[in-house]
Every structure is written in C-alpha cells, then in structure tokens.
Amino acid sequence: MSDAAAIQPFARPLSGDARVPGDKSISHRAVLFAAMAEGTSHLEGVLDSEDVRSSMKVVSQLGAQVNLEKGPDGSLSGTVTGWGAAGPVQPDGPLDCGNSGTTARLLMGMLAPWEVEAVITGDESLCRRPMRRNTAPLMKMGVQFEPAEADHLPITEIGTPNLRAITYDAPMASAQLKTAVLLAGVRAQGTTTLNEPAPSRNHTELMLPEFGVPTTAGTRVATVTGPVLMHASDIAVPGDPSSAAFLCAAAILMRGSSICVQDVSLNPARTGFVRTLERMGAKIEDARTGAEGKEPYGSICASYSPSLHGCEVPAQHFASIVDEVPILAIVAAHAKGVTVFKGAGELRVKETDRLQAIMDGLETIGVDAWEEGDNLYIEGDPDLTVAPDVEFDSRGDHRLAMTWAVLGMCAGVPVKIRGFESIAISFPGFLDALRALEA
Ligand code: S3P
Image 1 (cartoon, helix red, strand yellow):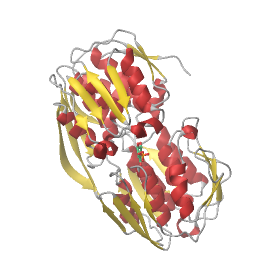
Image 2 (cartoon, protein in one colour; image 1 turned 45 degrees about the vertical axis):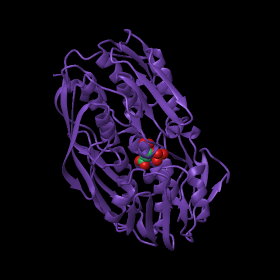
Image 3 (cartoon, helix red, strand yellow; image 1 turned 180 degrees about the vertical axis):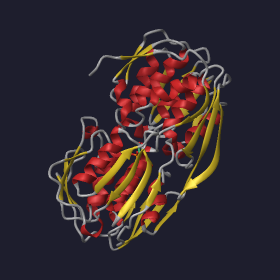
Image 4 (tube, protein in one colour; image 1 turned 135 degrees about the vertical axis):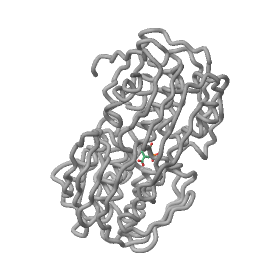
C-alpha cells in the first residue's frame, strides 16, 4: 500500500455551483444492459471510474463492442453494440470484476440464459464479499455454479437457455440481488417476481423498459415477463447523488459555506441522505428540474448548519442511505445527541466492513460510536475538534477515504489517509471538485 496521503484543510468557506460525475449505479446498468441488447446503444454522461471500467472490460470480453470515450467534462460517451440474440461469446479467460460488486452480481444474472462457462472473479475485497445471495435464486432458475455452495468468488457459472421464471423472497434489500434475478428473468419463460423486505434502489426497473423489457415495479416488488430480446436504447446518465453527498456534507460542516450541486439524480431511492440531513436540522434542499427517461434529476443545495441534532433512521429507509452512512456518520459526529441508523447490518459486507471502520475511525477522534444488534449509534459533539495529522485507514474503501477527507478538511487541520487512491473507484475528481468550491 502507498504512504498515507496528506489532505489539507479548507482555507475558505465553500460556495457556488458544482457538478458531480455520472451516477455509478446508472452507469453500470447503461453499459451492461446495452451489452445485452440487440443493436447499438448511445450512452452519454457515463461515469469514468475504476468500477465502471470493470463493467466495460467484462462485457468486451463477452463480445460486446464498447466505444466509449472521455469528453471535455470527463464523462464517457459513445456507443455499445450488444450481443443481442447471438448471446455472449465464450470468454478468453476469467471475468475480473475488480472491486465492483455491482459488476460481479449483475453479471451473474446476465450470463444466466447462455451456455457459456465463465469464471467470475475480482480483487481481494470483492472475493471476500458474499455471493450466495445471488447464486441461490439463480440456481432455482436452473443456472449451475461451481462450486455449487460457494459464497465467494472466484465462481464458475454455466447458464442455460431453459431458465425457469421464479417468485423469490429476497432475504435482504439489495438492488444487486434484485437486478441479477430480473436480468435472468428477461429470458425466462413467464413472469419472474422479486419481493424485498424493504425497497432498494430501482434503477433497473426504471431502465429495463427503455431496452424493451416490460417491467412492473411497486414498493418492495418487481417483475419482468420473458422471454424478451432486449433492443438498443439511448441513455443519458445524471450526476451521482452518492458523490454529491460528500460535497453537501462538507458545506454543512464548513462555516460560512453555501453550495448547489446541479444535474444530480434525485431518484427517491437515492436521496435518503437529503431526508436524513433535513431531520438532523441541516440546511439542505433538493429541487427537481427534469428527467432522463424515468429518472428524475435536479439540484441539491446545502449550507453551513450550526444547529445539528441527532436523529433516528428507521430500518425500512436504510437501503436509501446505504452508501451514504459513512459521510452521514461524520455529520452525526457533529450533531447534538445520539443518531441511530437502524438495520445497518449490510454495512458489514460492503467493500470493507464499514460498520467497524466507522466505529474505529470515530474512536480515533474521541467520538462514541457503538453497535447493538444491527443498529449503529453515534453520540455527537457540536464542539468536536480533530487533532492535526491524525491518521485514518480507508481500508481500500473509496467511500471511507472520502469521508475521512471531508472530516479533516472541515475541521481545519491536515489529516492523513491511508489508501486514499481508492477514491478512483467512484469519484476520481473528488478533491478537485471540493477545491473548486473554495475559490
Ligand atoms: C448498488 C446497490 C447497493 C449499493 C452499491 C450499488 C447497485 O448494493 O451499496 O454501491 O448499483 O445496485 P446492494 O444491492 O448490495 O445493497
């Protein structure tokens, strides 16, 4: 691992307008669904990050033609010609999904109806993450996995053209699991139904109809009816609210700040952090300005908020903040009273054990944070100070790296972050985006 990066504090309050790169979840889906479709899709605003590059690489190995190029705004645009009715080709080697759980888990559903034999693997972090949640329903549909009982990559998948449609009660709210089952269902005979214990992000249900797949989506239930041949589509990706959350949290904590992030996805399944920050007394507001397909987008404006207080996030809402808990934890650490994130167990199986990482990082700066069952508690301190040069370990997790950076930058002291380069997974221009707001 490289040396710890030294992150310098903000010298001035943040102000003005910002844009964030394309939404990671929507970018993955645009690339992957276009690869499955017959014909040539036109994509724009695709996030250029290591995770999305993993999706681009594996679909290329499977025979899709990916011609996406970086434009002046740093996003990727161009075409993807899919394998359509011909199906994917037998890959020349293992499909390495890098750090990307979305790539690996969605791929399992994409490969389900085809007789190719594919080894799915990833980096050390991805190979530690649970996969049985995905292989179990796909096996019910007729897919073979080797080893059959494996919960971890590498796993070999052998699909079948005779997929059975199923009704499946997911044990956890996971859009990655839901999407894998729905993607397999696209080519199964009949209606595949996925029931969830709580609503997870619904980008798949919103985007599949654009590729010609009849889909229904209710709260906690999604269906597709197959078999359908997906056709090419044109997709424009809005900004990533998960990246915007870091900028908003910085404005809320940095005295005198006031910023607006423009053209960001305002899908309600993703803006739980705005609702949570409102409940903590933060000055934050979202406003819809348009929609790309069925995905709403608009602005999120946030200002310095001196009177934050703790709040409770119910388990039913957890999926809507699942990627924002680390940065929300930093805001909670500055709030008066206790904040509780209920049903936070999924954090243990993210890029690293984020529950433990949040508690350990907060302990470093003297903030009390503890878990009880699946709930995460944080006792805030409005007078919180951070000692200069304190060192945090990102554990190779992009969202933790950005979280500790925002903490230090707003605290007015330099901090050190091990594994800071992991920000390239989702937001390579993170520091530049923050520094531009300081001007
Ligand atoms: C994602 C779903 C979530 C999220 C991840 C992206 C997606 O994971 O944490 O960053 O694009 O479907 P789970 O589905 O495992 O909750």
